[in-house]
Amino acid sequence: MQNQMAGRVRKAPENFVQGDGIGKVFSEAKAGRRDFIRNAFAAAAAGVTATAVHAQTGQNVGEGDPNILELPAHSKGLGQPVAAEGYGKPSKYEANVQRRQSPGLTQTRQASVSFAPLQSLFGIVTPSGLHFERHHQGWWDIDPSKHRLMINGLVKNNKVFTMDELMRLPSVSRFHFIECGANTGMEWGNVAVPTVQYTHGMLSCSEFTGVPLITLLEMAGADLKKGKFVLAEGADGSSMTRTIPMELITSGEVIVAYGQNGEMLRPEQGYPLRLVVPGVQGVSWVKYLRRIEVGDEPYATKDEAVHYIDLLPDGQHRQYTSIQECKSVVTTPSGGQMLLDKGFYNITGLAWSGRGKVKRVDVSVDGGRNWRTARLEGPVMSKCLTRFNIDWVWDGKPTIIQSRAMDDTGYVQPTNQQLRAVRGTRSIYHNNSIQSWALREDGEVVNVQLA
Figure (cartoon, rainbow, N blue to C red):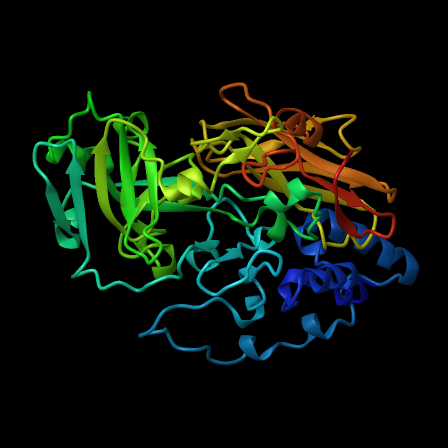
């Protein structure tokens, strides 16, 4: 019985579909049957199975199982030698865990998005090879020996730094999430994309290493009284430029980073230098950073006056809405997954806030009528992803699963209705409303939006 159940385990749709269009993603998600057992409470599930097998056959669990009775090759022979050269790779059995592009968003190679597979990740750190990507003019692999960072504007001395000079300065390493301002954006238009990879996958979390920007400004003699803002400029073809408030920089949080997860930045993440602005939407984390200008007012650049602004119900635009508000999402069980049987499960997910630490996450398994407080798994750090878990016994009936986060400022994640009452329905950016997953009687989980 146990082996038969294991044989029914299927990968999540986004793990085996090469999406050519959003319709295909939907159809594959409907047909797919998710490997939910591996994320369930293994001991409890095994105990239930053992009782059932013994009661029906009188046999002990595993009796007659060749995977137990016969030693496999890896238990009888020599393994592979140490990888003396080259870069390490995941197991071939994990090859389907990868970033995915969205057919609904990606129109060209150069201006593109790829989504992190949140449903397949553990803990809070996103492996560098699975980190989401957002490019405005494609990515480059820049020679670090030729890259320069300029500091100018309201400073006593214009400064130009080489990578060697930057890496000789005292460094800091900190864990932070980065989220695109358009993450969950398709939900604004009542487009219920099928899986958490597509609803929330423009989100990742890494350890970043670099020099605090305030250190470089002080070396240049920046006027911190007149200088209320800085302009960060990238070296890619789009010349991405963003205004950063000085109060974020003087706090010491903003980093000019060259390291990510213990190694140099990947080219698609801005190698050799990018800005890290904790809690602020990802577009402000300028990649291929080449210039910082100190100024006395916001710069209203093209990507601040036309893009990344919020259209309100009265027709006005919210500009410079950079902070990513408190948000959470259940990653298991989530859209495209399948519960194979009723019984004990572990509900897990991620929570984050651009204003500080996550203080609490509540989970509902009845569409928001009742809530229980989940466990926050340590470490809980400021402006960083936080993993939550909660035990649950499914009775086999249809239901709706949700999570709701609160940060240490007291802000509570809103419902769809609450957010739309303030922001209307014409936005693209900054959707931090509660995500709902409908669990059907047959065990299939789908994305739904509550009216």
